[in-house]
Image (cartoon, rainbow, N blue to C red; front, side, top):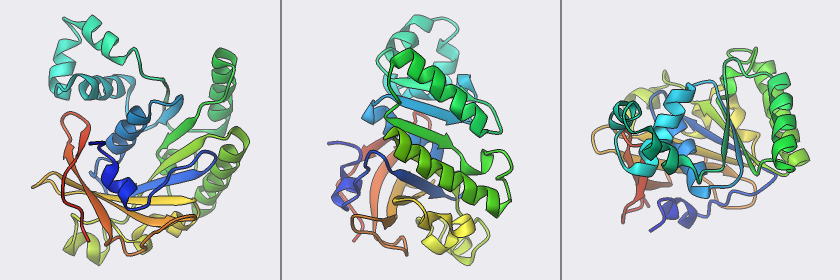
Length: 248
């Protein structure tokens, strides 16, 4: 069964030319979720990562593809690099690393991508919104990022995926930390801007991974985050699995 079947069963439909926001509190595997999701799509992907180094990203993807833990992969790179190189060979990923992310960097990477592939990427990932230059705490800059991301999606036809943070200090974050944050817990209220906003949470005790659709322009959503799909997460392998149960 497709790992994301429970999410799609909730009516979630990612579309080309639109912006998707993935929000969650600290330590909820947002980057892992985006990495696994885009790897499963295996569309032409340009991935801007300010949260991961090149080695970390390669290790997580190799772990995902070989079903080994990231620790095993990191140790194995020294003695069996060809195994992991082969495992990654069919992925349509291009990475851009470094923080902060700047729009000049985005323009240059896109130009290089088009020069190499003679087409725009089908998916563009930004990890994460607050790692854009000037956007760590400035609401105006964060809104500018959202506006530019929307323009980028329209101009290229790509699905643009943005990681963003939810509050760790709200009452719900302390009382109910293992459920997806509601829309009013998203920092800056920015989840209202994209066409699709997903809220995620990881229960470290059961490794259940809950995904709620907070907003969807052309489909069902629930701003409370209480109507969520449930997956099984393997953080040490950056893998997600379908399970039989879905929350009501």
